[in-house]
Structures are given as structure tokens and as C-alpha cells.
Length: 444
Ligand SMILES: O=P(O)(O)OC[C@H]1O[C@](O)(CO)[C@@H](O)[C@@H]1O
Image 1 (spheres, rainbow, N blue to C red):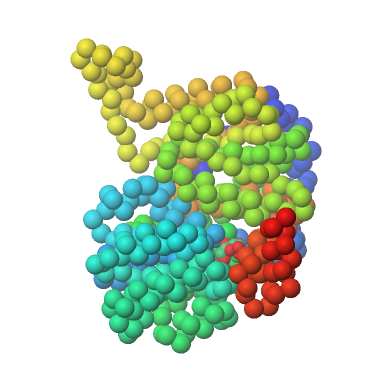
Image 2: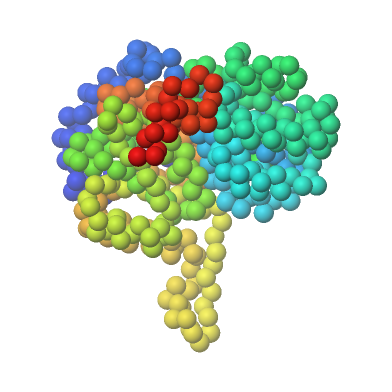
């Protein structure tokens, strides 16, 4: 089993009857998902995606990735939120945080996910003297952060290779039929890929949104999809033993006991962006109607030296979920040091992964002693297959968790508020009335 949920450390926080009591609600949520009768039912394309995905487009993704890897030194991936996090999360989980430095081939830089001029200038610098391509990703085609960066980077590309060649180096991933980006792509003849109508941004990593950048990183996307398909087999079944549902139940039981914060933690830095992906998935899905668990994350043992104090002794508002990676991408044998000058020979003659595991075990015992409920998501490795399975695990858990909370897990109305204010303050046509009101509020 590549991915499973282990609740052995939760025994003193949750009684078996509590799982039994909530399970009928899981049954209901499961049936609503399967029969597509629950809230947000027009965004359930992800449910069967690992088997029903568009095979023709999948082949085109592989071809495009091959072309990009052969004719470019740099791929700029412009996108934000669900049009960014999944791709970067998988690339870094599978290939490592330093994949750009470690690989001789294609460098992949993510941009269009901020309005920082510094970040954009830094990206521009990275293209100097390099052959580059752009993958612009936006389901709506209108997201400001992405559109603004793309406007600049497209011009940079055109200035560098001419408009005709630039059109062969811009890959647009967007809506099948509508939106500014789709229109532009059609006009310019850019290769395009589709964000399916029934898959929301935060569920889109296994569509072209994630798959093109992931394939460009040299990751086997067949393996990734196979992992997700295996996850669908396991976590799509209605059973009290379904581990994704046990995780969803655990989260909701603890939430009802006043634990309103979840900290997802992993002892592998390569998991950093998977943490970020998880935060969008659960945060956008559950945080609404004045409800929801706040998703937070840590990388340990790094963050034990910053957040460790709070987790051990601070306000008891959280529970933790550790992603326990059983086999790391590689290992390091610690040799004995003659003279033992640093006093560390007690660590010698073993692999560093063993030391890391002891750190995890010590932390589990310390935090549960400190009153923090703690569950484990056990993952064999961060291979493409296992990451695919993990993605499906989180998808299922998140959807059911949202239904347990009686929210629509597939919309995100709250994200519009900052956009409306920003547009009004910037004087975007159509927002005139709000501008004066907001400027007055800023002066108060
Ligand atoms: O793909 P798009 O339309 O640019 O949207 C990017 C992201 O923005 C949001 O719509 C919220 O602003 C997310 O849900 C989404 O993942």
C-alpha cells in the first residue's frame, strides 16, 4: 500500500464510537459524490480523471514536453493558485527542491504567481541569453498576476526570437472554448491544452495544468496517473476502512472538539510545495460560511526550531498530520569521526534517514504528550506513482471533509473580495463607485 492513514497516536484523543457516530455522514457524503447530487456537483471531473483522462491530449502533452526539453534551456510556467501549486509541488516532491541546479537540462521557473516587480525582474534575468519557452496557465484567462507577467514575458520572447518563432514557443493551458487567453491562443496559433470545465483549479494538477510542466521536468506522467488510478481504486470505495475517509473523519471529529487548525508536517524538505498545494486544496474547499479548519504546514525538523515551541506548549487549538515518507529519494551514511571532536559519534555508523526517523518519533511522542492529537499519512516514497496516489487520497478526503462540514467544497467565492478592491483602487473600468469609498477607508 503506497499511501495509508495510521491513527495509532490518536487513540487517547478519539474514541472508536466517535468514528462510528460520524460514519453515516461519510456514507451520505460518499453517495452524494458518486451520484453527483451534492453541492458543487458540476466540479466532479476529478473523481474519475485518473482513468477517463483525454488520452489524445496526454500524448500531445508528452510530445510538447519533448520539444520543449530539446529546444529550450528554460521553461517559464506562468500561473497562480491551482494553476501553479500542483505542478511545482509534484516537480519538487519527485525531483527535489534543487532540481534546476541538479539537472543539466531544462530549467523550470514558476512565475505569474505574484505582483512583485522584484520577482518579475528576477525571472527576466534568468532568461538572458537563454532559449526559452512559456507555458501560460489560466482557467479563466483573466487572472491579473498571471496575465500581467505573461504580457511582459511574451514580449520578451518575441523580442528575442521574433513573433513567428515565439508563437511556436508559447503553450497555453486554459478553458476549452472561452476567455481572453483562449481567444489569444487561437488567434496566434499557440499549442493549447485544456482545463476541463468540470475540474476546479485546486483539483487540476492531473490535467494539462500540472502534467505539461511535470512532463517537462522529465517525470514519468504515466506513473503519476497510474498512482492516482490506484488511489481511486482504494480511496473511492465506501468503507469505514477507507483511509482517506478515516482521515476526513479524524479532521472533522477533532474540529468539533475545538481543534480549528491542522498542521500538515513532513520531515522531507522536498515536500514543501506539497504542503502549499494541500493548503490551497483544503483552505479554498473548507474555509467558508465562517467555518473550516485552517490548514497550516511545517517542514521538520527545520520548523521545530521555529514552530516547535508553539506546537509543544502554545494554545491547544491544533492537531497535526505527519506525512511519513518511508523511503527517501536517497540516503547518507554517517561515518565515525576519529577523536569525536563534535561529540556526534553517537550518530555514526548508520544512515541519516534513521536519525531523521528518530527525530520524527521523538516529536510524535513529545507533541502527543503536550496534548496535540496527531495522525500519520504513511507514504512509501515520493516517487511519481506514490505522489499520484497521495494526490487522490487528499482529493477524496477533502471532498468528503467539506461535505461533513456542510459547505460546498468546490467553490471559492471569498477570493473575489481582494480582487474587487484591488481593481477599484487601480481604477479598472467598471469599479468607479467603489474607488472613492475604499480610498476614504484607507485615509481613516
Ligand atoms: O486558473 P485561473 O483562472 O487563473 O485561476 C487561478 C486560481 O485563482 C483562483 O480562482 C482564486 O483566485 C483559484 O481558485 C485558482 O486556482
